[in-house]
Structure formats: C-alpha cells, structure tokens
Image (cartoon, rainbow, N blue to C red; front, side, top):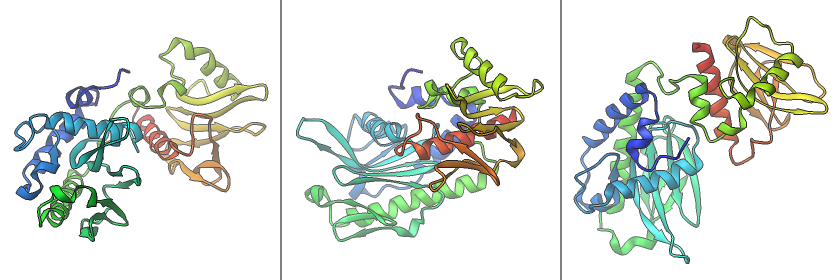
Length: 314
C-alpha cells in the first residue's frame, strides 16, 4: 500500500468507523482554547486557520510522519494534535521535536535525547507539567531550553495546562463512546494496512496460496475452518509460526506439536521474555518470527491482538 502523503490520504485509508471517530475527536480538540503564548507551537489535525503559519498542515503532517508513522505502536491511530517545534541536524534535515497526541498513544520525541510512547488512556493529565526548563509528561520530559528564546514567560505552563486538557478530552470522549471501534476492519484490511504486511500470508494473494496450503496440511487444520492469515515460515523441520482461522489461533514452534486456542479463549498476545514467546492463553505459547524484532515487538503484539479480534467478528 502506497504511503499517504497527507492527512486526507491517511484518513481515506481507514475504515468508515475510524474516520467518523476522527471527525468527532478532532472537533472536540478544536473546541479547546489555545493560549496565545503557545499558538505558534500548537498544530491541530485539519487546521486551516492557524494564526501564525500558512504551512501549518504540512508541519502537522511532518510530525505524524516522523513521530507516529515511522514508529507506530499500532495501525490506524487517529493523530489529533502536535505541540512542538523543529530542529535541524548537521545535514540540514528538519526534525519534529515535541508531543504528538493520537486517540491511542502520546508520542514524545526529544530529538537527540530519546523518544517515549505512552498509551493515551493510561497517561494521567495531572502528570503533565512545566518543570525546570522542560515539559514533563509523567516520567518523560521534553527539553525546552533549546528554544527558550522563543517562549513567553507563561508558555511552558500554558502548554502543560493545554495538553492536559486535550488528553482529558480525548480520554473522556473514548470512554463516552462505549463500544470499541478502534479495531474495525477485516483481518485482510488490517494486514494490508500494517507495516508487516509483506511478512504475513493472506489467502487473497496468489503468491501466498502455496505456503498457506502447506501450513494447513502439515498442521492438519480442520476443513470446516477458514484460514484467514498466518505469520509463518517453512524450514526443513517443518512449518512454524502463528495462524488465525475464523475459529481459533494456532501456533507451532520447531520440533513441537501444534497448539490451538479457540478465539473466545484468547487472552491476547503477551510477550513472555523468559520463554521468548507470545502467551496466547494459559498453556499456549506461540513462537516469535524473524519479522518481529525488539524494535517492533510492541507493534506486533497490538497487530496480532487486533487480528484476533477481527477474526472473531468474521
């Protein structure tokens, strides 16, 4: 799938339910007053009336590309707000420094110092504060000394109050929405939209048919179930990996028997560092795969969990 080049293209790639959720959340964030002292650092999704910059939409999208799309915690997040500024490295490349708020994750990127990803639902708005030349979000901090000359006396404190209001609004809106629509979409749609798309095998892709047929045969999958997707590889020792049908999650490690857990009994995919495997349910450990690394494991966990939920709806 070609990468989106702006917010409109990105939103068009999402299911209708997610687009509706974006419209709702973006409108609520837009209703929050932006203090004048931080207007030049505040960029809302879809904002066309920025008081300071004509290219505000591009500034926002650059932050989405650099802070979210390159290191997404999950697919299909709804980017709502960027608060921050740009830095330029020795090669003249522009980087987004600051805080990006989506409906699921708060991304903090302090270029040169580190990045932090915090679930939106678990970040306490009261933990956002200005403190000794930095903007603190819980235990994470964004250094403000490098752009202190551009700040007004109240800018840091105003930013903390504003970001706390945005976070609180998003949290309350999600709670009021009730039913979780975040994972709307079929198994195939979620896979095709993911960063690991080419590592999965899908029945709709002719090139994957042989691999799926071999897995179904070797693992003796029931012909009454529909194989929806697999993250698997074939070796001289057989096929190993993870497969999801419309009834269950299957897995097999090399030299081991096949494990099966009905979809209704799947707890999720929780990484067990000691076992170096994913815990799907009590007594069911699923092996990792070369496509899953330390850097993308959290992302893979969220994706596999969402695929299981989508399979339950199929």
